[in-house]
Amino acid sequence: MRDRLNVSLPVEMIARINELAAQKRLTRSAIVEAAVVSFLSPDGADRMEAAFTRRLDRLTRQVQRLERNSGLTTEALALFVRFWLTVTPPLPPEAQAAAQVKGRERYEGFIEALGRRLNQGRTLLDEIPRDMLDTEPSKEVSKETKD
Image (cartoon, one colour):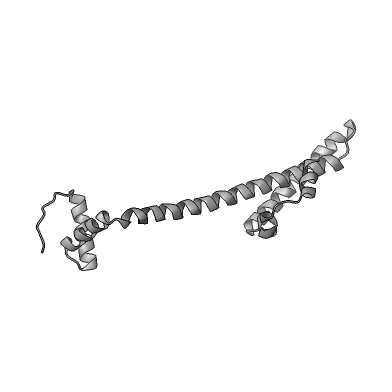
Protein backbone atom coordinates (compact mmCIF):
# COMPACT_ATOMS: atom_id res chain seq x y z
CA MET A 1 0.00 0.00 0.00
CA ARG A 2 1.28 3.46 -0.83
CA ASP A 3 0.17 6.86 0.32
CA ARG A 4 0.76 10.18 -1.38
CA LEU A 5 2.88 12.92 0.26
CA ASN A 6 3.40 16.34 -1.27
CA VAL A 7 6.61 18.12 -0.32
CA SER A 8 8.16 21.45 -1.24
CA LEU A 9 11.82 21.35 -2.20
CA PRO A 10 14.21 24.03 -3.41
CA VAL A 11 14.37 24.40 -7.19
CA GLU A 12 18.06 23.44 -7.24
CA MET A 13 17.35 20.19 -5.41
CA ILE A 14 14.53 19.30 -7.81
CA ALA A 15 16.90 19.96 -10.72
CA ARG A 16 19.47 17.62 -9.16
CA ILE A 17 16.80 14.95 -8.63
CA ASN A 18 15.71 15.31 -12.25
CA GLU A 19 19.32 14.95 -13.48
CA LEU A 20 19.91 11.88 -11.33
CA ALA A 21 16.62 10.33 -12.46
CA ALA A 22 17.62 10.81 -16.10
CA GLN A 23 21.12 9.39 -15.51
CA LYS A 24 19.95 6.35 -13.54
CA ARG A 25 16.76 5.90 -15.59
CA LEU A 26 14.63 5.91 -12.45
CA THR A 27 11.56 7.84 -11.43
CA ARG A 28 11.90 10.89 -9.26
CA SER A 29 9.74 9.16 -6.66
CA ALA A 30 12.17 6.24 -6.51
CA ILE A 31 15.13 8.56 -5.93
CA VAL A 32 13.36 10.55 -3.21
CA GLU A 33 12.13 7.33 -1.60
CA ALA A 34 15.68 5.91 -1.51
CA ALA A 35 16.98 9.13 0.04
CA VAL A 36 14.27 9.12 2.73
CA VAL A 37 14.84 5.41 3.48
CA SER A 38 18.57 6.06 3.82
CA PHE A 39 17.94 9.01 6.12
CA LEU A 40 15.52 7.08 8.31
CA SER A 41 17.50 3.84 8.47
CA PRO A 42 19.01 3.11 11.89
CA ASP A 43 22.35 2.10 10.38
CA GLY A 44 22.78 5.50 8.72
CA ALA A 45 24.44 6.86 11.85
CA ASP A 46 26.66 3.78 12.01
CA ARG A 47 27.81 4.34 8.44
CA MET A 48 28.61 7.98 9.17
CA GLU A 49 30.50 6.98 12.29
CA ALA A 50 32.46 4.39 10.32
CA ALA A 51 33.35 6.99 7.70
CA PHE A 52 34.50 9.42 10.39
CA THR A 53 36.49 6.67 12.07
CA ARG A 54 38.28 5.83 8.81
CA ARG A 55 39.10 9.49 8.27
CA LEU A 56 40.34 9.89 11.84
CA ASP A 57 42.49 6.76 11.49
CA ARG A 58 44.02 8.13 8.29
CA LEU A 59 44.68 11.51 9.93
CA THR A 60 46.20 9.77 12.96
CA ARG A 61 48.62 7.84 10.74
CA GLN A 62 49.56 11.05 8.91
CA VAL A 63 50.23 12.87 12.19
CA GLN A 64 52.31 9.93 13.43
CA ARG A 65 54.43 10.07 10.27
CA LEU A 66 54.86 13.83 10.71
CA GLU A 67 55.92 13.34 14.34
CA ARG A 68 58.40 10.64 13.33
CA ASN A 69 59.82 12.76 10.53
CA SER A 70 60.08 15.84 12.73
CA GLY A 71 61.78 13.85 15.50
CA LEU A 72 64.23 12.38 13.02
CA THR A 73 65.01 15.81 11.61
CA THR A 74 65.59 17.23 15.08
CA GLU A 75 67.86 14.35 16.09
CA ALA A 76 69.85 14.53 12.83
CA LEU A 77 70.38 18.27 13.27
CA ALA A 78 71.35 17.88 16.93
CA LEU A 79 73.82 15.12 16.07
CA PHE A 80 75.37 17.20 13.31
CA VAL A 81 75.69 20.30 15.50
CA ARG A 82 77.24 18.27 18.33
CA PHE A 83 79.72 16.67 15.91
CA TRP A 84 80.54 20.00 14.26
CA LEU A 85 81.12 21.75 17.60
CA THR A 86 83.28 18.85 18.78
CA VAL A 87 85.61 18.62 15.78
CA THR A 88 85.85 22.27 14.73
CA PRO A 89 88.77 24.04 16.38
CA PRO A 90 88.58 27.77 17.06
CA LEU A 91 90.14 29.93 14.34
CA PRO A 92 92.70 32.64 14.91
CA PRO A 93 91.43 36.14 14.01
CA GLU A 94 93.61 36.37 10.87
CA ALA A 95 91.98 33.20 9.43
CA GLN A 96 88.38 34.39 9.96
CA ALA A 97 87.97 36.10 6.56
CA ALA A 98 89.31 33.13 4.58
CA ALA A 99 87.11 30.75 6.61
CA GLN A 100 84.01 32.85 5.87
CA VAL A 101 84.74 32.78 2.13
CA LYS A 102 85.28 29.03 2.25
CA GLY A 103 82.11 28.63 4.33
CA ARG A 104 80.04 30.50 1.71
CA GLU A 105 81.48 28.25 -1.05
CA ARG A 106 80.67 25.13 0.94
CA TYR A 107 77.17 26.38 1.72
CA GLU A 108 76.47 27.05 -1.97
CA GLY A 109 77.73 23.54 -2.77
CA PHE A 110 75.48 22.14 -0.06
CA ILE A 111 72.43 23.95 -1.45
CA GLU A 112 73.19 22.68 -4.97
CA ALA A 113 73.62 19.10 -3.74
CA LEU A 114 70.40 19.36 -1.70
CA GLY A 115 68.52 20.64 -4.74
CA ARG A 116 69.82 17.79 -6.91
CA ARG A 117 68.90 15.24 -4.26
CA LEU A 118 65.38 16.61 -3.83
CA ASN A 119 64.87 16.75 -7.62
CA GLN A 120 65.77 13.07 -7.76
CA GLY A 121 63.14 12.37 -5.11
CA ARG A 122 65.65 11.00 -2.61
CA THR A 123 65.33 11.85 1.07
CA LEU A 124 67.12 10.89 4.24
CA LEU A 125 63.92 9.25 5.47
CA ASP A 126 64.00 6.91 2.47
CA GLU A 127 67.47 5.70 3.48
CA ILE A 128 66.53 4.81 7.05
CA PRO A 129 64.82 1.43 7.37
CA ARG A 130 61.36 1.76 8.92
CA ASP A 131 61.98 -1.03 11.41
CA MET A 132 64.91 0.93 12.86
CA LEU A 133 62.63 3.92 13.47
CA ASP A 134 59.82 1.87 14.97
CA THR A 135 61.87 0.10 17.65
CA GLU A 136 62.45 1.52 21.10
CA PRO A 137 65.91 3.07 21.42
CA SER A 138 68.24 1.20 23.72
CA LYS A 139 69.47 2.79 26.91
CA GLU A 140 72.95 3.10 25.42
CA VAL A 141 71.68 5.14 22.49
CA SER A 142 69.56 7.29 24.79
CA LYS A 143 72.57 7.93 27.04
CA GLU A 144 74.77 8.70 24.08
CA THR A 145 72.38 11.35 22.74
CA LYS A 146 72.00 12.95 26.19
CA ASP A 147 75.79 13.45 26.65
